[in-house]
Image (cartoon, rainbow, N blue to C red; front, side, top):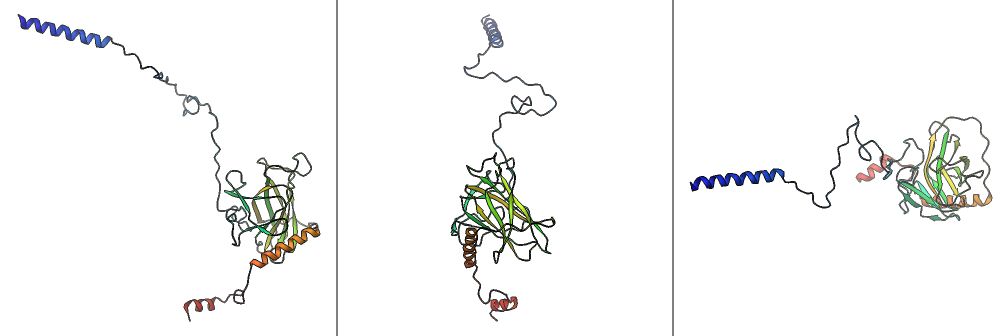
Length: 280
């Protein structure tokens, strides 16, 4: 009798525990966020705010830049300044001088503010830039171009010449014979950069750019000298002022002083050099 009573009591207790567990509701912990309701799909991928196709606020701009120089047929050495920024005595594609024609370090800028690639030059007012190049073969004509942008102040954008930031001339690299003057664009491009460009006659000599910055500090980038189409007869370029010619002469003498030639440097006898290397 006692055993039956104990078994019955145990069964009643177990039933009460089961009923209590099935009816119990657990309250959420304070501060726990409510679950986000599922948003029905609309047939496309969900993106943006709440997955409803709306675009959220812009976080950053992403640019793709070429660091090895474009275009591939550019006749200027390092026209986009990717390799001419490091100071030193190397024969770089770009050389910088102050307003008196004395050499100086070409300042650099990097990143998204440049016109092309990852690097560009920063020139102060009255600086002079010399850009090395060559000429198109078979007496083909050319088209030259260089881009500039004021760092802060610049010409009046509503004025007659908002892009007149520098005087740019083509010169023969060896004797500095003065050639064409490039003309500034009528207005800046959408990104604020101004193009200074123009046609250039065929040449049997290597061609270089001679640039005199005006009275504003500017960024300089993306210089090109490309084979172009013949545009017919052109008027001769206007002559340079005496003070400009004096600066050209000082720059010319400095560049010549960097190019030392010995009796065995030009012409080079390759057979003789090979024998000397072997010790014959």
